[in-house]
Image (cartoon, rainbow, N blue to C red):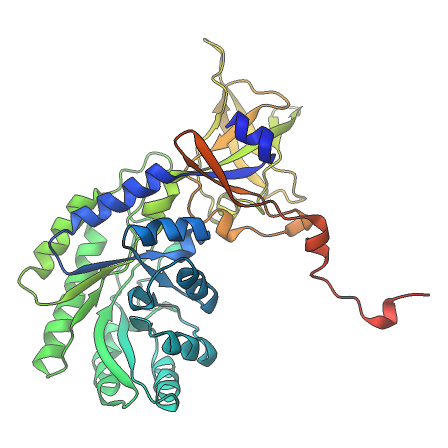
Length: 405
């Protein structure tokens, strides 16, 4: 880490290619022998190198915008292995995806279904569709990443699902293929999945009894990772639960893991700028900020923070607040966290930062977007360079009446 820090400066994100590969292979192996497509959730980490790594392993992509779709295609993901989800697809995005021949649209409302039918007919094609249902299951996760309760912006609630499927089956521009579900992110127990998937399987049985052929079952993602003391389910146990619920069921499965594949493969490396002693608290001020990693500020998320250099033997830990330089009290990564002594210039590693880190970064306080680095063995590659101040300011345009004078 020190060698990379000297070369690219701090802060920066660093990802392990071997961990990314191992995580994907473990997930894929759990479903070996099943008709199952694994579509990496691009929103977790959309760097082109990460996408290409997964694409070379056989992954498809789960996208929620035209931009993510373009990224997936550019990284070599076949259009035939791309699922387009999201509650607010525009007609332009629908047309772009239809023209590329994507695998499936996960439709989340009846107005969206009507719009997609209209766009597909205008292009002389039929849109492959799975309707996302909302099974009214408490995912037992943070409220901002729970997506499966009845009054939620995602999906069509079960009470209105049957009429929606009947309507979709009759639309000339829609090829109704499947049922989709995703109840949230960072789930650490199997039971919410079991309840949700059980309800979806019963819906599929009911639809087939009505003569509506459902060939696909998209079960989304959501298995959690360890940030602090969580004990998320093993993917083998998850796969066994899916097999139990769908065994003997002639249906193609799809999964959309994101965080599970990339979170623990990444760290955010920062450098201590100052150590400030207050009346009763010590502040470790680092050069990484909430604009680089917003999860602690947005979700009150816990990330382990460790010195890159091993502390001296017997060094006593003491509580500190780890904060960033942004002009917000909320720019805090840890409060009262027991840490060994660190001083100005020391490097810190913020762990499990590979998901929803760089991809959610901003330029707040006119701070530059930071580098991303991919490590394989002893080699490292800068897969996104640090932006520059000139290119940041070049995004602004000043009207003529403010120039001169």
